[in-house]
Length: 387
Ligand code: SF4
Ligand code: SF4
Image (cartoon, rainbow, N blue to C red):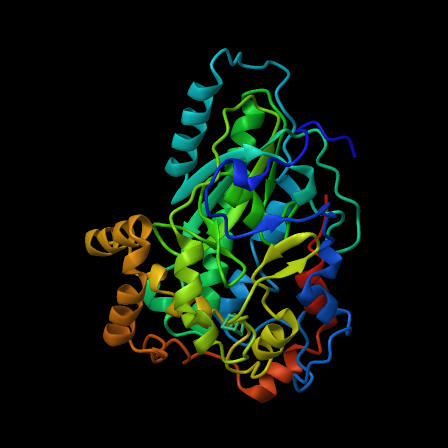
């Protein structure tokens, strides 16, 4: 694949205290190596009482967000619209970037940033093994949707899984709509969203200045902490790019470790960073994590306990923005802020109950076991129909 965006810029050239460093060449990742795809192929030893990762969930609202009725499987077909032959002229890239960001926010993005599409972060293949080519695109517009703070406090539960799926669904609609809009301006665009992913979102979002890589291995934003879901639009529209930012996440994660303390699977490293595929960073044990996701499939099928307890995940109120400002500017405050967070929210915050009636219409185990024998439903989840 040709590389039109040049070599990956050094993170150290933008921020003083990066939370990761690139040690060698970064090979492109394969969607088929993702833990849930490997588990779907039976390559990960998980005891799930016969309920596989490709099984639809027993909760009806969860099935709306995931298999078998998910809207995203249909968006897949229109995610790369044909550009209009007539192109708008873009004499001022900064003005166009501001317009695209304003449009993304209008369409529902909570955060938006723009980076060059570094080809290292384009998946080599999709979940069904088909090669992915994104060499026609020069930029990635990264959008984030914040998840509801109270709902994710119920994790692991159906309620948090529905909340995650709802944000994925919104990302799907938002990125596809934005891609169609860019095609109407006469430029190439492809939406990338959960289930139709062309790229690794976290490194591109870090390069787009949306946040920093955290101990959990996902991006932490100043506004919502790691409580966001990401999507992207790849395009060749001329745009001005954003740059990585530093608001002291590295130093805060060094002393905090609340995610590691609260992880029910012991999957988060409480110690030093390690080198993974040429990148020095904190590493999550994805097999241990995913085993926990599948541990009790009648009651949950994911977990975001680490995200729920992170002190940065608090609601985006004036008070919490003030605290985030102190943390960002004064590393000396970190231990005191950790202490206050433990004092007010607990060292091990209690899981909240799901909203009343949330579980009333869930299938019984017997009905569920009957349903997952329907192979047609199982297939749809991992391999949405292509156009
Ligand atoms: S819980 Fe603490 S250590 Fe973990 S990601 Fe959040 S700030 Fe970093
Ligand atoms: S998602 Fe849950 S199991 Fe996985 S690392 Fe986070 S807290 Fe641990």
